[in-house]
Length: 233
Image: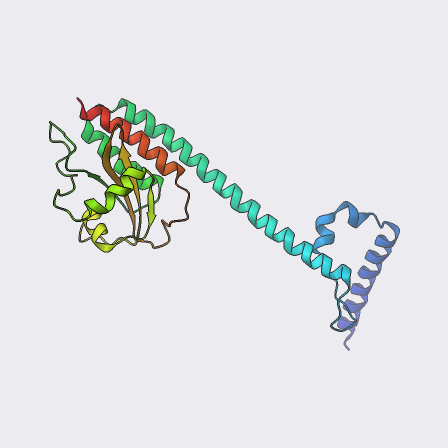
């Protein structure tokens, strides 16, 4: 062994002796810092048989890590919800100030695309919805469309439909040249069914059947009320 290595070993042993001496004189230290104690990894030298305390500590460390991960997820969700609330507030004010139907449609399409981090936003109105000024001409479903029978039950339930749906429905809602992998279809209704606000994504994971829909429901109610009010003018 070289002199340098020997000296390093002596220094390490000296530092360890100081730590051991300090802990022996101050046994309450680890109790005062439980996060340090639970993070310690103490090897067992008795072969494959681990002591009960070691097993308990291992379980507690695992539970602690799981709780930290869950807390981080909850904080992230809370921040996202707060951001959505602020955006809804701004959108509500802008909708109240907009007095032209085409401005409302354009505004909603633009902002919802940002709100929900989605790729495509479309309005699709039922053929029987009357617009005397012909402002919805570019947004009607074809009255001969096969998908009207598919979407009417969704409208009647007045609950957003999320996830993967049939390709023929995608084509009529978003266009034949648009590749949509998942979507959220938000019913528009007031005194009766108006149509759909369609959010489409090129990601299969963006919208799914298990996701929460409360913000989508509130969005549908807000937009529906403003559209209905302007249709009568």
